[in-house]
Length: 109
Image (cartoon, rainbow, N blue to C red; front, side):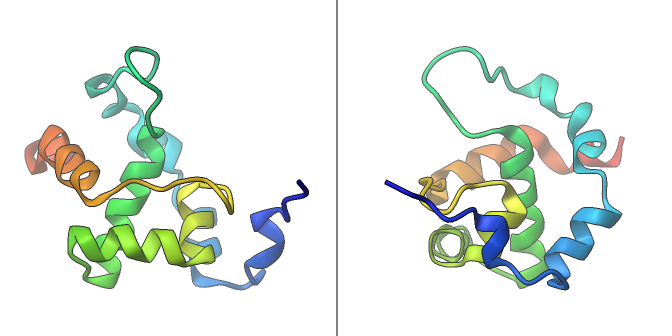
């Protein structure tokens, strides 16, 4: 089955592309990744993708359930978070769990 690269479906001047050029999410997330072990247990989502989803949630003023649907149905949001076009995206419980592990205090450090 041939899958169109998601990059081809998002406008070159899309605001989310601009944000990805401005913010170094890998560096921003580096100190928070220690909270998660991506190589143990069942296959999960990359921490950076989840963090970017929480940024979208804040920017778009979405609830966890709205964010779940937002990611599932919108190409530019999947692109921003690093998901492929046909990849499953997290459900609402993932975002709540992620937020509770990060905690606001950790973000301020």
